[in-house]
Length: 99
Length: 326
Length: 195
Image 1 (cartoon, rainbow over the protein chains, first blue to last red):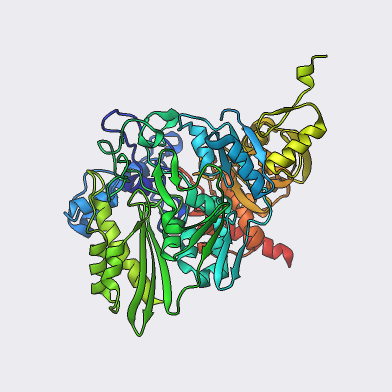
Image 2 (cartoon, rainbow over the protein chains, first blue to last red; image 1 turned 45 degrees about the vertical axis):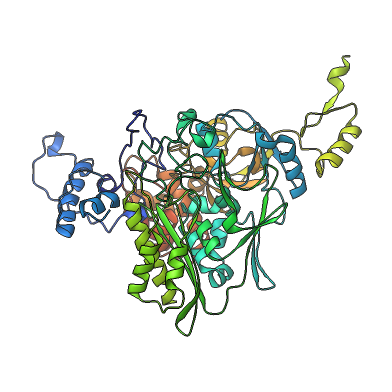
């Protein structure tokens, strides 16, 4: 989910009329199994839970955490900070001045 | 979906006769993966009155070699083409193209002829309930020119009017690079002349004309072909840019080349400049780079799709190098 | 009796004929048809090894027939445009998207849904549960059916083959890494059961 948000997902509006242009799952791109790199999960028990039994939810947090980690990775790779998600090839080429 | 009539055709003649009676008011359905999406969204002003199912016509699903020519029936599914050893050995660019089209499920449903005859994927054209009455629906103007055109044409609009929607097929550039011809119920058309920009139409087919066979001539000795596709996702996505190249070499020099890009222009774009650049020379990295530059020399990108020029340049270079490796 | 009603209408062009013989001749001559079209919308299907006969409308998709009309609610509607794989069913041995198939065109076909796979006690179900290859579970039937079709023709798939086969199924919760593990486990179980 995080990778998908960092790389593909974006609701596109028509700049003139404001109509949503990609209101379907073909144009609103969710990552497929092929787009995902290897994932390994490491659970760190910190005891920070405020919920019952000391639990805290982590499942949905990746939606914001992964894009936040992808931008520094892109900075390390190309030397330009991306301040807009998703980081698409078009935006990277623009940042590099190669359009 | 709204109601419509449904006919199963059992022969090509029957399907042609049905389409002749209905004209523009009926549609042909084979795989249906493109047509049903269109009908569910009701993107067109007119709803088809009838569908003519051609899946019931026997003997249109085959891959065979006949007199050196590779012949593929219109109802052959993309996964059958992708997995056919005959296609892989004789026309590897087509096998690679079929392999990279859409998703595994859609490849099991969609046919080669359907992939050629599919409608454009412009998000203004495809907006639900005919929201944008654009040029391709006999409307007033192309909304993509002033709108979000990140996936639109970088080689200008069509001659008649200025529609900027690209042709989304993956197999079309492969067939053009391989110099294929398309046999219909009435005539045989070269793949290159098959595509045309008209309202609610992407091909030169008449209303009562049906694609029956794809014919790929035997490649000259020393020919290798390759297909590359650039899309955001590795599966499901339509191409942002794709490129097929078929290059014939003798004694290390290029003697003939056909390079075709798609999803960059309103019809598949033959990169003749790039072909001229490499003919008579031996392929190396620098020459491929030069050919890539030549391929996009005439590009006129719109506001949001300038990156496609760079992508097209690189993909031409890589396709040429991929041909040289084999 | 009103004479107008007894007239027969050609289904192809709407021309009316007085007798069935006249209509047959007209259809043969003008439309080159093999015969008169079958009574509209009557189809036979084998769903999970049980035979059914339906009277369907032309605009019903296979998904609508099986999910809404027959009540086998395993397959799910997610995108309805052939982009997600949640409605996958096995039709004649191939995993296809039931939302993009017209029911009327499936006459005589064999359909297998996730209910049939579960009723057979296929090891995939257990492997999916063991490996927790789901979060919300909405896309899971599509994954299970696609994996079953893969295992049918390739009993021992590699991880790349599994990823290639499942690339058309979308999962919003991103349970993707668990699916190859689950499919491999099911494949191993099937192999052990054969010995």
